[in-house]
Length: 108
Image (cartoon, rainbow, N blue to C red; front, side, top):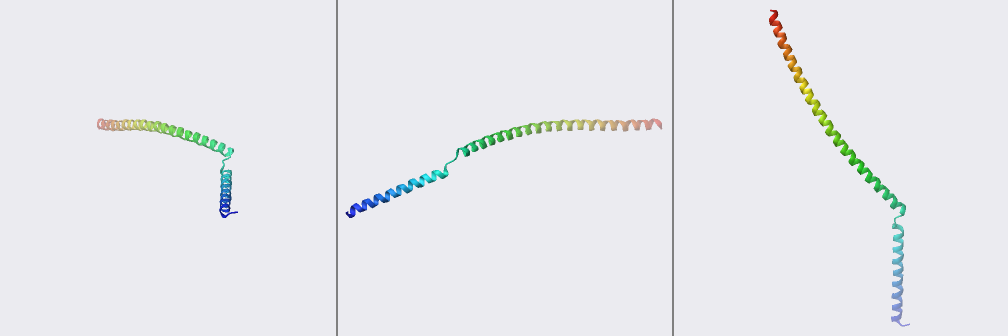
């Protein structure tokens, strides 16, 4: 055997071993990183539940905003009614004082 043939044979053997190691490493990597069908189904289910939760949250926010607007409106109406009642009471007290003063003047 010539040294040149031995060099070619050794190089071929080394390349073959390197190819086999690379193929094995690739197979091993895909074997351990493969996602199971159950995991994909679980992720799909979780995604759907998250989407439903976001929709529910959005509906709750909308409801709370509407409710807040209603309560703000009711509060404004109640405050207006209270001001009107207080004005009426003030006028009635003033009128009562005037009538008492008039009666006191008539009695003297």
